[in-house]
Length: 114
Length: 114
Image (cartoon, rainbow over all chains, first blue to last red):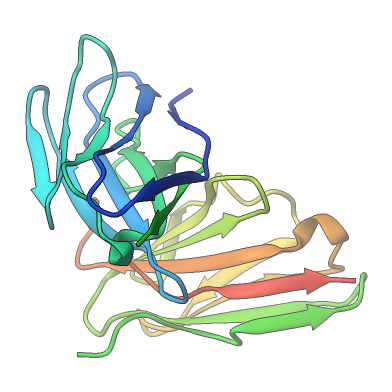
């Protein structure tokens, strides 16, 4: 079945460091890929998405490129801030149905220290 | 405008009791989803509603779990005879139309079964 695997956290970085959170997936067909973010005390929010191979999603300085050949969608940011501290979830659309159902990874906690 | 709201925010119940969790989606959103986030796990899909019908219930873990949606709006997730393994954060999300992968999440209900 379809699945998403993320690197385990927590990831602890100093402010202005470079961030990479790895995400790989297994899927049949051509899923869309997403990163959601959950800030402390808040609900999940869509951070960025990519709907086909080689697409790059970007938002708030974060980027991720849909790599079909490596089945990956790694999240990157060139210079993190303390306010980026949150839990990040990689997800894919379950294309086997037309419901919009998402399949999530386990989440990666990012802690950014001043 | 108002986002997705869920109530209660926290629920502690004794093993064997029934619980009801409520979700108020964004007004006008026709699609509604329930997910569960257990400790150390990613988000698991439970059930999907389009309007008042539930074409995908494949994620409900047992027949103790049920959900309904009335008036194309509010949804209730009911867990009967709760077990300790039901302890988790239950998340509700809505989206504007069927098959949309851009889902808007509520803050969740944290259920603890003692």
